[in-house]
Image (cartoon, rainbow, N blue to C red):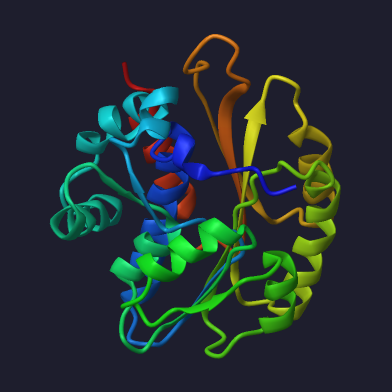
Length: 258
């Protein structure tokens, strides 16, 4: 099943949390003059128009990035990345994780992106054409297993499924453990939605059991509209860089302000 398209949800509060922390991690790691690898398993199309009918229909961007962007300092890596995208694509553009990464990585760094949805992959290929990224039209988790450990060995892996395939919740703890064994120095980031039904609960319990030193960062927020199932956003991070726990708390506080 490949029905999910992120344009309906781009720029929501979950994106803000996820992308703000990703941008901080990449800025922290690129501060050292050593190359790194960036790998993403579910890249989407990479760039979204928040004035598109799909984005306007849900109102999630209006409740998310439209309210939150100016809460980040001008020199915060997330704000820097957003400003770079706006300068190139206009104020209503919103970058997915691939373009956030592309705006912060350097010439010596490498990027490998997977996307399985045919139309999303075609859009990703167009939007990432000038970035030098390696694009793979395949299952992202299988891609990650095949390329890890990457060269260079320093690096970040973003696992960001749509969770439209229900066995993702059961599959991901083992995949995360296998990836850690293959790439023990990688910063492994797994995003998950917090839904009313609590589907993430057993997955998170298994990860905590298998990876007790992993950090878990969650935020809560009210449903953006009646009947909306998402009430929060979470990130599991294996090998978080020094200072990330404090940064996650700062981001959480920014998003919680009235």
